[in-house]
Amino acid sequence: MTSDPIAEQILAEITSMLVETVGDEFLLAEEVTLDTTFNEDLALESIEFVALAELLQQRYGSAVDLIAFLAEKDMEEILAMTVGDLVSHIAGRPAPAGAGDPSPTVAGAPAPAPAG
Image (cartoon, rainbow, N blue to C red; front, top):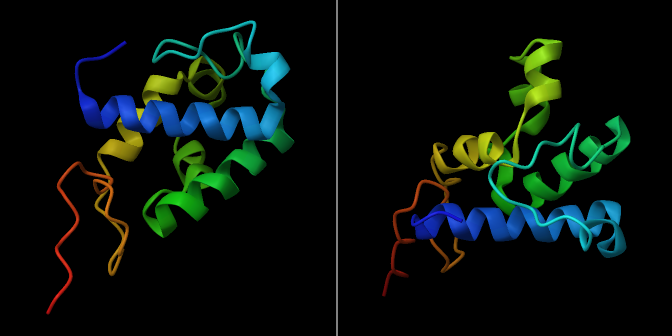
């Protein structure tokens, strides 16, 4: 895996979202790593990308827009995209404003302590 705890956390969250999207029986046959490709290894359909995008937005807010991220890529880049590419994209995004989640922010800094 990776020695970066933030990347590990994001990878675990993406894996959970993939299980929710495509079903755990499919993913049990394949360990999801940073090198796992969405097209070749997971054979994600476009509708599953849409479902994944919705789950990402629910978790990370508007700071992570998978559809916009994909729109910046050409077809070959999309077909070759790995889970690690998505982890890097998420890890490089600022935390959504006003996020009260006590878990680390998207960029890896701890969430601010509640005022009071």
